[in-house]
Image (cartoon, rainbow, N blue to C red; front, side, top):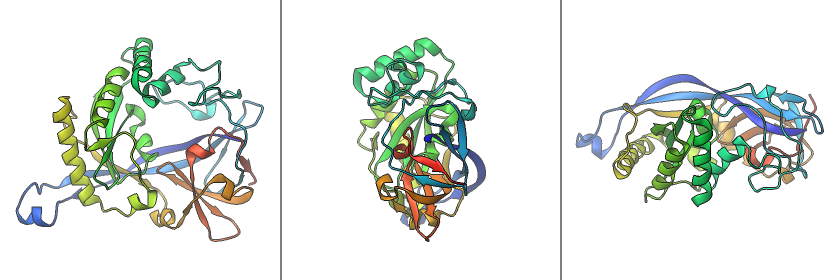
Length: 313
């Protein structure tokens, strides 16, 4: 079967206040506590398509599957709106072979979904040209959010997504803490801000990070660094920010220690093994080998749109 989507939802969990400590606290500088909103990511399952048909199934948490390395890739296109949430179990996915690096077949190479991916997933004139096309097609129907993501290191990632799925998008990336930078109803403006922000010395569009390294980072220094970088970015780009900054985390619903214990693996290393689905966080599917105490982390991008999964229970 063909995994098409790691189907997740996020739910508000709690809020807490983090206060600066150490020398700055002693000197009474910028010690006002910052409120952190916590969300948990809930894995509904892996949406699977039967090879050769449009039938969809879902492999849920605790289901057992066999994962293969997958040799055939299928077009990433599916129907459904860009400007609002939909039910992914009601989508139709294309079974043709992709002809582009972005994963679209010839028929869907210029679809609205492909235009969106080209706008935010490519660079230079190709990116901006597709953002203009997207704005012409949708006007102000779509609101975009430019966000900042801390990995607990000196640099912070800048990214863009549609506002209705911001927490799901953050859940797909390893992070210590995140915040919103600004909102706009123009894809072109959102992408322009993202590109210009990514060129600032303290921000990046393509960070290098390790999931276990991120998990081990304390929130307090990461949070205050993110707050500082956010303020510097707004000043540098001369853009309006959120009236009241929101800082938040999207954390696994299961014990984070499982992600520390798990081994990040390639599909070829677990080819043909019986695995149990446990959870999802940071772009990784967490599974366990049923006959052992081994835990594995599989990058979702390695799994999707290929004939890699067989449900066995």
